[in-house]
Image (cartoon, rainbow, N blue to C red):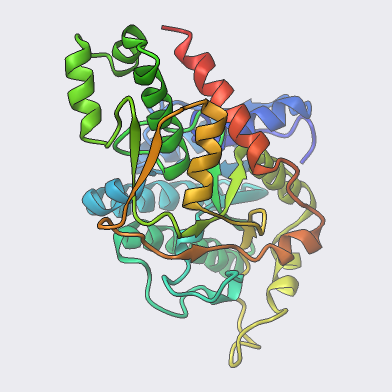
Length: 360
């Protein structure tokens, strides 16, 4: 990419897209195209075709997606598979039709089998059964990977796919019902701290309710009180977390320094027996290669937030997969490694969260 190349970021307001936008702007890329969902519905085939015909972007970051935590993924199964497949089908196909030079498709490490060996290597894709609760979302993302590979092989396009681990940072979703574990813990523990300190007005403002009684009753559904915060499961499962701006840096690095032909060579290393002649698994994991237990994560957030109450782990609730850690050796060998460690990243995320709360 050149500094004046026309770059389209699909999903520029989300956690992923906003971080990529910030990185490009800080690195003096000056011809960036964005559209809000209201301005361009990416599930609308005709609208996406018209956009590409009019704007003719040279590079595309496909960060737009319908995302959510374990509860949302399990409840809104049809929405997750339909909307994500429509978005990526439209953007990838129009990128081919309108001769986009390079596209980067963002997936998720939930594409790997539920019981994949740890750490998870790229070649473990499609070797076993997926985790049931997010199976529709994972299948959509797998379809996106295969779509990029297939267009490259049939049409000679240069579409690459990356699979970030659990991300967190500015512009994350802190919704109590639909957010992922790290932002959900930040908000729950923050609200418990406010209750503990008697800052009832701030609790009411945060939840946009009328009385503290309403607020307490609502928070009780999520196990949040002035003295404790309930956390689902035993706290023993381990997860990996990556600062969103590190992820963005990795994406821009790969867009600048890698392409599909180079990734074919890397994907041949460590390929499973019987796949030596196949071109597959050209996607790249993006992560830290380091994980932490949910209990340790919650304790870290509790200390950073300054909550003096208890963390209560409800072992009657499901733990989910006990460990999900990415193998990032391919990414490291390409020349990139993360720089923000978890403690620092959580502190920066909490500071950002507080800065947003200060606006109302």
